[in-house]
Length: 619
Image (cartoon, rainbow, N blue to C red; front, side, top):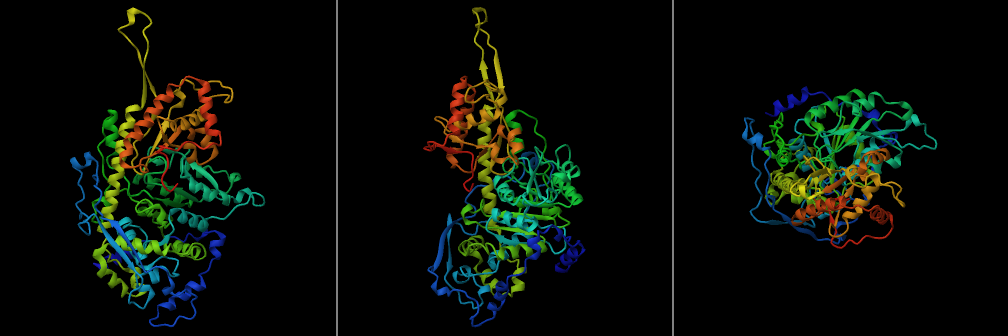
């Protein structure tokens, strides 16, 4: 069996040499001489007089202990739409992840030290809190490597497969990736023709912009539709690259994209669209930086429940059928990463524990071809080094669970080479935890969208003009918002139809014209007033460029169903919907001007009882 797997791998092409994408600084980086020295510390009974490491007996922590959640704490939702489960499409019958213990939580403990002499073969505070190599804490790195190559991306189509490196979260991972593949550009002395560019969706996570703009990188937005980034058509990826004017700068050579539960629009890019975009990237030699903090939050019920809510015909779903099964129906049902079609090795994927454990742990990983990871390790050696030892030690203990103590002992005894290839970790509990989290978020999404659907329109009945018409009334129906139920992620991207407001384009005094941006500002502050008391994220926060902000982004609000507590989702959604209805009944230009003035003032708003529907906890 092993020989068969090896021969299959040898038939795959090697990843392409894409080092021409490296920045000039990246090309000049050399391995840290100090980190290279660390390999000698693994010699049993070696007397370390050369390392410059503090003695671990002086660490003021004797143990780290915590109560952690049982993996099956939360109820799962179905992995396939109703039409797929009831129709002729087969449903994968894999093993069902079981919880490791039959209690609500378990205690994990990281001791101060273990009897092992080799610091690379121990899970304790003496090694976790000590200086280490940039790749990450060996047991956690081993577990992440197995999870990534066996379960997340089991069919990466280049020889040898990808490698991984730990990061301090996706923001750190993206920052290092930008350093890896882009030079800085200074408008005061660098020619415009050399200015690097980054492609991204028209609406984009704003921290990505904050990372690239100080480096002088030009942001180039790509149009989107209900399936995410467009590959073809006007404003699509091919159109932009094919018709690029070099007078604007160098043709962009990398994409930043959130493909699963896109932030802020909630789309999931289909396999067919991914193939289309990947082929375009091959043609124009573009690197794909895939940021996927929400990959496990794909909602099988969204399309059908939206159709049912709105009286539309439900289209039979055709579930994704992976070429290789992992044995977990939950994982096999998910739309795969760009890595699944990455024959060239041009995909750099960012993952994080921020949404699966906690944002404050600042822990994640990058998956890419080995040549990219080697350069990223050089960057890490002289910037953050590996993530916090406290966090790595606690997370690896939590992921393993109490049933894997014998496996930890076995891992201790392996050589450094064998550790890198170790695949003996049991991951049932972690997969079950992820599946349960998806269930929580999917139920929240369904609850919010069902309530918002009740207020898509404002209904208004006319007053009879005489007694003859007293038994009759004309009801006008005005659309005030529209949106797609998110197919993944944590957000509802709501289009507010301000062009239908009675005061649209009304003339004012302090605000000359109540146009879209002005009404959007008035609405945002109006929603924070009683009785609404909700805050939504304005669409302009996610505009890829100032032009996008002025053109269309002002018409959107992003609602997050992940931040507030379970019991607040329904009342907050109702208050938001009712607030829109009240806003449409405002007939006074002066009142609108007061709302705009309040938003633009520097005074602090009254935050008492204000519900957060707009922002994630780590934003």
